[in-house]
Structures are given as structure tokens and as C-alpha cells.
Length: 102
Length: 172
Image (cartoon, rainbow over all chains, first blue to last red):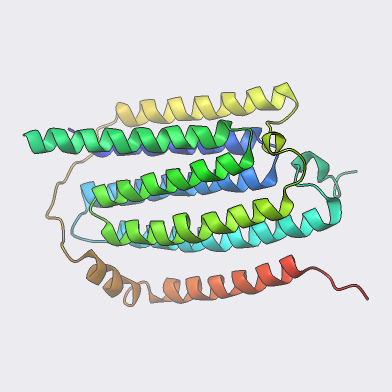
């Protein structure tokens, strides 16, 4: 019987994969993609808790919608930043972005 | 009883597809393959939402994530890609960073999974509502209307900011 535990474990594994991607990748686009993975894991948590604990209200789904909105805003601004940096540095490699390091 | 087994099998199938495509996204050396695996992950998460009875959220997931955000990401990849494709998504060159990243992620995941597995979760299987969209609309325009308006302003600001950032500075 699949319960809340299985959904929480699945979303934890997805979140862990996202953390690994953020910490070990070089390309800025890949890091943004890993962040999207982590946000999706949180969404699964919200919807699963809503379904299994408080199914006659939709507050969990509401918060998931807000997370999707914020993720869309974040990814558009992030990709615009990456394109803007690429225009100056001709690279999306994070180890080349040392402008503010001395 | 057999319906329950089918339900469990569907969950296992969707979960394995989602996790495997997420792993493929992180481990792939080619960033275009990573983006395609990411789309598969988004569709898997949408299927999980459908399985959880959140059909509206699943449709939003497919529209926004698998439709819009993935197109945006692929578009950005096409704009910034140069050189050979199979070297576009390499891991951090310093082995220390790579190992530490894997170590931190593994410790966090194992700790959280153990905490979830050994904790007593309340399972109030209440009555599932049929009209989740109506409930969501009532909440969005009722108690949470300020958050709704703030989200609208945030989206507007993000659009304007993305246009200004991506257009760049004009040469004088």
C-alpha cells in the first residue's frame, strides 16, 4: 500500500539528486535545471501531504501553484542573467565567473 | 484489492521513471540530453500529481514546466552553447568539490529518508473533494488574494527584468 511515506521518500530522493547537481556541476544552466528539480520535489511534498492528511481543503495545492509561479519567474530571470553574462565572458562555466573575486 | 495493487504498481512505475530521468539529467555529459531528461522528469512529476488527485496541478505542471520552462531552458542552451556538445555539461574539475557535493547530498538524503521512515505520520484519509479547482479558486480569490496579487506583480517584474537583462546594453 502506497502511503504518504513513499511519496515523501520519493521527493527526498529527487531533492537529493538536485542538491548533488547544484554542488557538482560547472555549467550555470545545469545548476538552474537542478534547482528546478529541487522545486519540483517540494511540490510533490505539498501535494502529497494535502492528499493524505487534509484532503477536503486545497491549501497544499495552492502553495504548489505559488511555488510554480515563483519558479517560472526565477528561471526566466536566471536564464536572462546567464545570457547577459555569456555576452561579456563568452562562457557559462561558473569557474570563469570570478569578476567579484580578488 | 487488485485495484490497490495496480495503483501501487503505477506509483512504482512513475516514481522509477521520474528518479531515473532525474539521475540521467544530473549525470549526462551533454547538456541537451540533460534538458530532455529534465522534461521527462517534469512529465513524471505531473503524472504523480494526477495520481494524487490533483488534476489541475498536473495540467499546470505540464503547461508551465514541460511546456514553457523547458522550451526556455533549451532556447538558452542553444544561445550559449559553443564547442563540442558532449563536453557542455561536465562536472566540476576539482575532484574535491565533486566528492564533497556527492557526500553532502548523500548524507542529507539518507538522513531525511531514515527520519521519514521511522516517524509516525498521521494518515487521515478524509473525503477527497471532487471540485479541487473550485476550492482553489475560492482560496485564491478569498483568503490568499494578497499573495495572488503579489504573485502577479512578481511575474510582471520578472518579465520586465528578463527583457532588460537579456537585451543588454546598447553600444553608444
